[in-house]
Length: 223
Ligand SMILES: Nc1nc2c(ncn2[C@@H]2O[C@H](COP(=O)(O)OP(=O)(O)OP(=O)(O)O)[C@@H](O)[C@H]2O)c(=O)[nH]1
Ligand SMILES: [Mg+2]
View 1 (cartoon, rainbow, N blue to C red):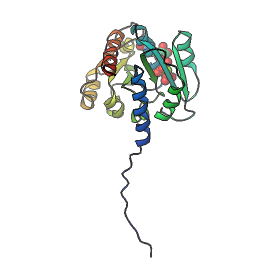
View 2 (view 1 turned 90 degrees about the vertical axis):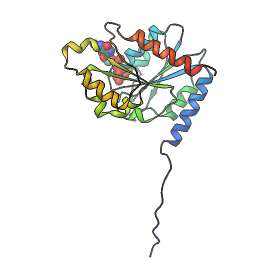
View 3 (view 1 turned 45 degrees about the vertical axis):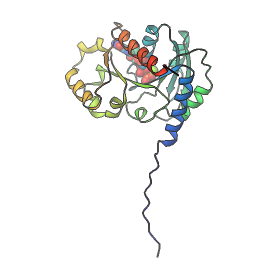
View 4 (view 1 turned 30 degrees about the vertical axis):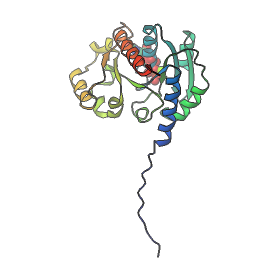
């Protein structure tokens, strides 16, 4: 007869990832690089928001890592604008993790302090579960998604340091219930600024860039 024993497994399945993420953050902070993990569903406007923020963040050297399952379309578009952009392809994985970002970061020459935007794989679920060395997570959502998303995909909203409600120029054509959206969001995230933005009108980017610059100054003070 076999001896049956119960074993409690306490190991944190994210432990190794978080360990690497901690070192990425430590290394980049030391180099004066503030890291923003930009999350959101496919096509929500992540790359467009990054371009608009970079345009407003004069005086901060921009760096971008693009995370996509396949292709380097966004990276090429950013490079064509003169932005230092680098590609990670996950070839199937629906999110970036710290080992992938670590490999990419090791090959980037950060000539001067600045802000590194990491555009995560388009997905409102898994990216929120993995730290990748960021100082803050920026969640891009949009009036086109519907106002129930904080209720259905809470983790991304909970973990966001700043939330950009994008494509507000399209609101007149949709039925977006802003108070329902804000009620769901504030139930899980009391503090993150929620900024309405549109790349068509330019609305919101000055404020979002200002928040980011303040966060960078705080995170890098006394390094
Ligand atoms: N009307 C409107 N369209 C926008 C806005 N922001 C982005 N778009 C459009 O939305 C589409 C997707 O934008 P992207 O910035 O490529 O979105 P993304 O989230 O980076 O997409 P993936 O990287 O493929 O996940 C493009 O056609 C943009 O022009 C906006 O504020 N208003
Ligand atoms: Mg993109």
